[in-house]
Length: 498
Ligand SMILES: Cc1ncc(COP(=O)(O)O)c(C=O)c1O
Image 1 (spheres, helix red, strand yellow):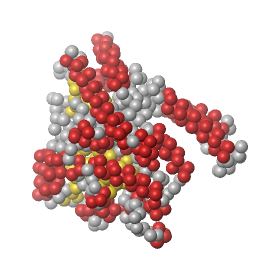
Image 2 (tube, rainbow, N blue to C red; image 1 turned 45 degrees about the horizontal axis):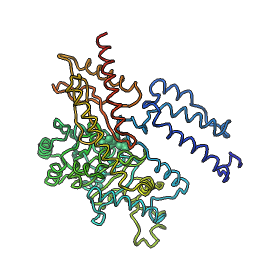
Image 3 (tube, helix red, strand yellow; image 1 turned 180 degrees about the horizontal axis):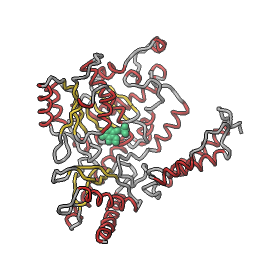
Image 4 (cartoon, rainbow, N blue to C red; image 1 turned 120 degrees about the horizontal axis):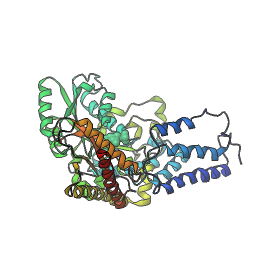
């Protein structure tokens, strides 16, 4: 065996590590179906974090790979079990094995894909994926559309917002009158991106939603008119195709109509919901999305990749390039090549320069499984959310003290306990928290909560939400969720009576 202190392990050492560390990774996957849906988090998780924290050694850790893996295994126990089949909290994704292999390969070959002349064929494979994704959403690469793989939805939204701002205001640097429009249900990364793009938060108008949590186009039109009359410069509407709270789809045809009339850039944050365009039913529900100027969506959500990949698609790719492309002398050698037929330079379409072969994270699973496997899994998720909704409806009809707050528009839904007559928001919220805890304590499924308005419109209350998006979640996991809800209802009622 080579000296472990050398940064270049020999072939035997590499193979030994692959077996040891790869074996650990595979064992983690094998354990997923039987692992509790909730890992150790909170105070106990923090205690594990403190227990494991140790100084960085000057030489290899005594105990070698075995000791390292023991520590890693303990660290993994102190986390939410996000790839597990019962994980229906926040926005799941699952984590495809094929992408884990892609990461291993791209990290071993470690090619630079910021400039396509540095790795034209690899950039071409990435571009093939982007071209296919763009056409799945209704954009046309041959007509100038372009795409970019980012680290996630937040970065995709950020680049879209920067492009919209640049298209209107160029390098003027004066955004004091620039106004952007979001809804009450918009993801907080949109406001963060607007701020990072130099738009003051006070210039972000929050538009009301209807009873199904969709942006109200008439309220938007009124606000835009009022803002123009007051001397503001509206430039951007950020709609959602699948809000995080309830999966609501903003009315894209009506918003596109308005944005066209008012010369506003329509960006759709489809980080959660966008991948559903890949299945027939999802495409029907997302009708009109191609009328937006730009779309952000997250392959690490709806295409089930492990965390680390978002995607931005822009109808006029030149507008995306205009804000991101700044040349540099030391890159001139790349331009000296014959660039005819070369795929676009990723670095010219996004904020990053150095990047690994991100495209392999999508290309490899698409080659190994085919696009059809994704279409089928996404159609299944829509059906599973309906199954959960039907199960809840049946319980309510049979007298369960629950209310449905949002029926699924995609694969998310929201429900809570019915409010007792005259009950305060605090007491109602506490009962919902107890119900959520009682479901999660059973450790077969894991749900999360949000705050949503009450029917009486006297504020918001803690509401449980279910988001089904992992390729590992199937009908039996929805049935477990419903069984655990029944048990949790009995338990919390007994506690209320005591
Ligand atoms: C609608 C929506 N937009 C944006 C984001 C942010 O995406 P990311 O976490 O990949 O940065 C999320 C994350 O859940 C989301 O649900």
